[in-house]
Length: 123
Image (cartoon, rainbow, N blue to C red; front, top):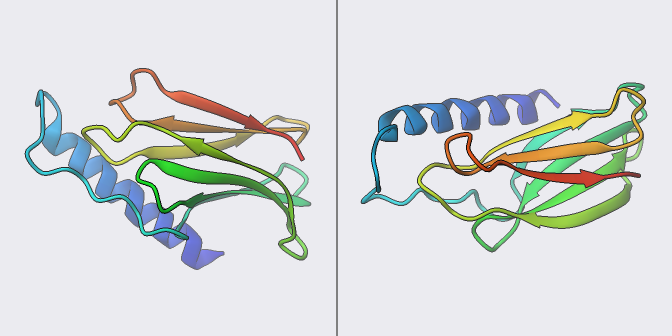
């Protein structure tokens, strides 16, 4: 779990630096590199900690898998493919559980905070 958190923190820092460097630019000559397929992008335990939501990078740039897993054995309970356009900065992906743990919402920022995409998933 700590490795996943450290990886996520590193990704967020790199994304923030890149977003800062490209702020105000109308285009970028250097496209960003998507994460390798299978990379755990973000993970979040449910409020009661019985479930865990994860986002995993897919082979296609901008494609991800959103899953809800049993926190005890990591069995996938539900999942769906999600995607966002590849833009000027790496995707910033966050997960937020409803207070009762009935669903999770994945948010993908692909456009400097404008037009964020929301994806809901329930167990």
